[in-house]
Length: 272
Length: 322
Image (cartoon, rainbow over all chains, first blue to last red; front, side, top):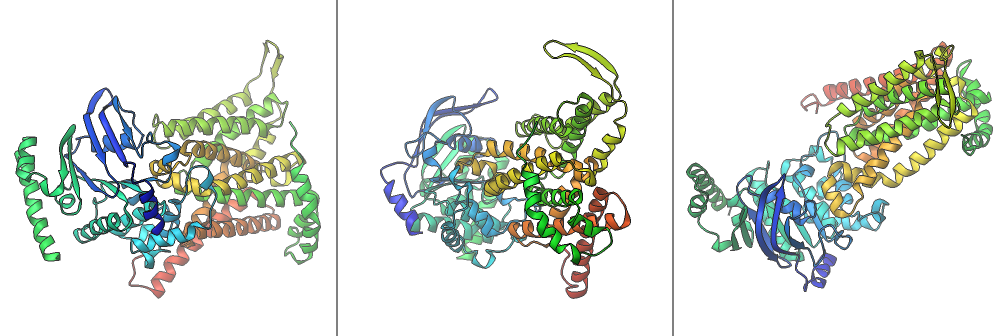
């Protein structure tokens, strides 16, 4: 992964993400407003928020798949989706981890797809084999490299999809709900792995999740999004869940979150 | 419309080899496929079409588009009927034109989420088939500006039409072979170049787009190739049976292959052995070539499924079947 680190150093002067006064409309409704944000290289940022708070809209906008109503988004000083960003940013979606069984590809075949960049890499490049092996090793799936994705567990699938992003040598990885559908043990080890990845390689990670407790335990910085940014800061300073519940003014949700947190913390303590 | 004589050139090139291996071929009639030009043409066309349709089928299966071949074959048949009545250029050219238009529309309707699933396939296949069937019975004369008087008289072409419905392997003209070989070579090369892009766009179109893979172009090109390959198959296996070569060998290959790459290789093995066995049986038993090939592909699939189940039952009875 040495080259990834080098890539990260080269771009030290550029922020992976700068968002200015962003508002986004979908079907005429204002989903996001007045978003201002900047992320520096090597940060592990978690975006949390309730369902329908605009998390996915935000991600699709920064990836250039939705157009902003006002404001602008810059990734490494470039417009989203521009040619210069191919290979520098990678997206780990839920869809890839929920691959249907009729797609009979192995971990290696999936990870190799990460090495493609634009038109030129529609052709196979044999030099990529090493890159692919490194990525598989990094996520700890060496034993399963030639196993079909459909035979892996939820956590392993998620790792395979992340390996695809790593193989692309992306300096900025965006993950959409990577914790859905995997058990607590796999979830904890996945979060630990992502944290290590930022430290070892300087990769920037932006993770969207509705699991506040899990994000709180692993990320460096948290953003609470509900139409606009309600909180943005160090994870340690993230407000108590009681305050969040008050903010949302929904008592039953507060209780639910609270229970999840206490049970999670217990398990976490046991794990440690 | 004339193509470069790629088919005839290929035939000239391969014929001496076929003649050399003819004495080792089993059966009474089957060896003639290696010596008579007419039957050599049939053999080469069948092998070319099987190779490219198997490769294409592997991607169709991963994209959940197994039935698009059937739909486009209906469209082709409609196009052939129109072509036979209107005349001018060969009916396969009409089929190619109609199928490509239909494939592009189906792709656009699906990718823009105007019509989800296979509804667009259903609409186009029945619509175009209906047009063909209507034209086949229509006796009408009309005048078009610039073109002149057009007289539709479908009398006497019913038998020709049937050839396209069930396939007529033994009546391939040199022009047919040229078209089939031309489509097969172009499609195979393009599919080979696009194979990683196709997989990436199938698995996660969004991630592929962010990587810079031209998702839309690949989707469109894939649809056009599918239409062209289906048209090239119609005269060999018949419009009704196109799916047999497009999907069944690929499905059998998936059962055995441990990776996508292995599936593609096994697909070629099952496809080619089905075609050779199908032609052998149809020649010796004097049945239709296309239908026998289709039957053999289905039997091969059944044998592999049952064989796998049996092996698991006998050798690893404690393991789940899946």
